[in-house]
Amino acid sequence: MTESIKTLPLVFEEPKGRGKPPRHLADLTPAERKARLEELGLPGFRARQLSTHYFSRLVDDPEQMTDLPAGQRAELVEGLLPHLMTPLKTQEADRGTTRKTLWKLFDGALVESVLMRYPGRVTICVSSQAGCGMACPFCATGQGGLQRNMSTAEIVEQVVAGARALARDEVAGGPGRISNVVFMGMGEPMANYKAVIGAVRRLTDPTPDGLGMSARGITVSTVGLVPRINQLAEEGIPVTLALSLHAPDDELRDELVPINTRWKVGETVEAAWNYARVTKRRVSIEYAMMRGINDQAWRADLLADVLMRGDWGWVHVNLIPLNEVPGSQFTRSTDQDTDEFVRRLLARGIPTTVRDTRGSDIDAACGQLAATEA
Ligand code: SAH
Image (tube, rainbow, N blue to C red; front, top):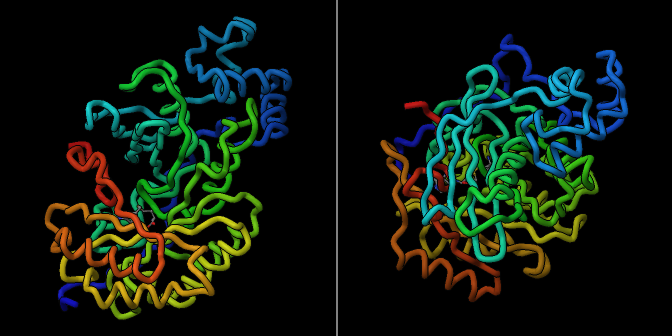
């Protein structure tokens, strides 16, 4: 391990005093939506119509909400469907099947989401925080620190906006629907637990209360906040858990994923295993392959040892070719070293795949999201 990789201070507190994002129906349960309208002196039963426009019809233009009385439409829309975020820029790659959107939130905070179309499925990668406090030294988002947590509605709106673009045939490949949501954009979802769980509920609530997606299509990726992993296991929403491990030994992981100084490899993997046991969902172990850092054959063997829990049915290893971040000392492993790493894990019986690097040419791949307005 190189000496120069510094463990940056962890930032858990978000800056105060910027005000809160506008409250939106996606922040609320159906009963709360009704109550909110009544609070505003508007008829509560309209909440369901507004929810239908938002989640089922994917309509955002009040003009198209013709079942709402024209005289009250503006007030109703303002009450439950306030404007949350503005797309500043959209970049496309892979012949238009990968689309990155830069969003400006109400307070000027910037976040990004990435839509990826594959044969037979569409995945949207969403942000859960503006910036990130976890300070992983190889990740672009980690370099700027945390600005703030996103609200449930701000998280959900990224998905709904993607769904709208697909429904309106704005994405190469014809009209479509979102099948998968991955919390692998900016931020540490487990450090914004309440809003993220709210978003997962909105995504899975049946229409028109929510988007009606299957929990199986949702992946929450975490550095390994152990108490939150345990809490997630008890929520009764069987989302897929991805654990960003990146090293099988504490000495190296303390540097690569600084939260490891708080929760060690052993307890983190134990929590992931418990998650798999409770939810019956296979956990995905994320491992970004960094040349000469974590890609040695002996570390593949050690990774296999660390993941051994009875049998391999509970886990799957996803190797991510490192996306090189400008100015970073970390570089991508060679294909030979990656192949050998895969070979050793497979030889031990661990299901292992290498992730594609979709969108890397528009800085839209894992760990590249930095959200600058330049
Ligand atoms: N905070 C969450 C989500 C982050 S992004 C987490 O850490 O899991 C999703 C994945 O991209 C994580 O596994 C993260 O470690 C990985 N990643 C970060 N920077 C990367 C880079 N430069 N190249 C490849 N993967 C990277």
